[in-house]
Length: 82
Image (cartoon, rainbow, N blue to C red; front, top):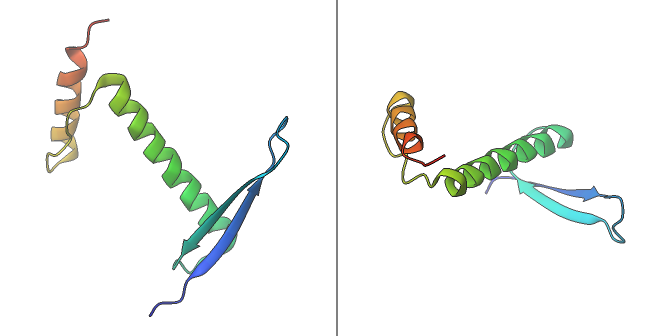
């Protein structure tokens, strides 16, 4: 069994009565600050993908290479009425 680390992330936002509390459980052997930064970046990337899918209705990006996916995405984007 691998060792894991649990971190609590507390965020205070102006105008909110209670803080937002999140927990990260991971088996990464890094300082807590780097773990939180890593998961924040991962969450941002997932949010951008979600926004992209809803904005331009991506069908699939299942090609094996980045270039092939870029061509597929551009062909989808060119069919969207502006």
